[in-house]
Image 1 (cartoon, helix red, strand yellow):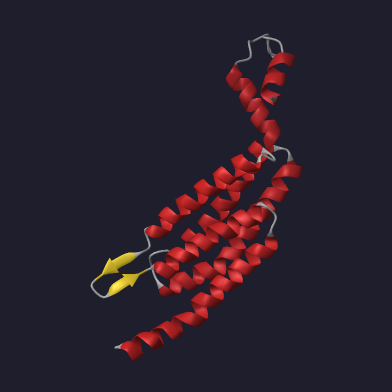
Image 2 (image 1 turned 135 degrees about the horizontal axis):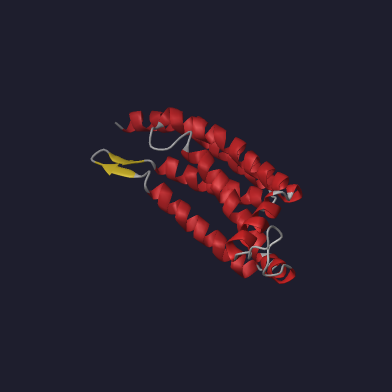
Length: 178
């Protein structure tokens, strides 16, 4: 809308040397104006930084346990999930139906990434905890985008505690079964 307004408000002749203004120039001017809207940049940046920080304990745990996914993947998934949902709410607004479709696509995409962590071999299936963790990290990022820090904190704590405390229990159970 702003681009159309700015196109209507400017004449076909530019401000400098009476050169015509192209749509590309108008788009670039509008982009520069949008990049300087600090009241929108800082809250979004803060949410993405929080998503990044909350993903770190899970990422460090997975990096130590497995090389499939770790320090790079988990924070990137959290930040990207947060970013997608921030963009969706900015573009779509209060349309719950459209926002839920974006969230559904996000959940499906992260499930696909997590599926890549699951490996089956002769000894069994490995990587399910990493796959579930990456899914939780996506939910963490989305909850930050919607302003639910409490949900993101709960997801972080529960995921970290399960990975940290239950892994030794799983090893003990596997030793008892063998």
